[in-house]
Image (cartoon, rainbow, N blue to C red; front, side, top):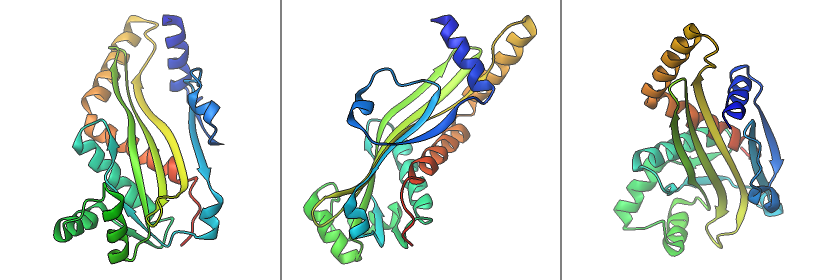
Length: 218
């Protein structure tokens, strides 16, 4: 186990991890032997997407377990990246203001339909936080965030597109010599301490990779 860990560590540090994009497949999604060295994005674009391309998308509240601060950051980063894909994006701030003013709860489909009608924005995108881990091994620090995202129509909740990905970021090294041990420990410690910037960078990576699979319909 330790040997496997250091092999993985060496490959990560030397930049051997690549991002692959694969059509979503249930068997792949349920497989337990997904490679730790693979930055994989699974996605599905359904035919309805091309029949009725989204002209406006509202970013909904992030689902899943995790801090409210992290989930709010996820909403903001997806709203920002979405502007490069669709003509109009209703931001989380704009959504919350309308929810408050009009007494709407977009967790419920009926209120979502009313929201969509009033905003003239017929589509929603919603992320679910499936994983949020923070590992620290003295000479190696790693953070990872897993997301599942779907875009659906307000009128009937039909999913037009979905994708999932786990983004990782780590620092440290293999302590082959006493000097390397000190250097790796320092790098890992800095990475572990710099949680805010690292988390923001991971979220940006995740959103960019996931939304790469969404066609540009501006």
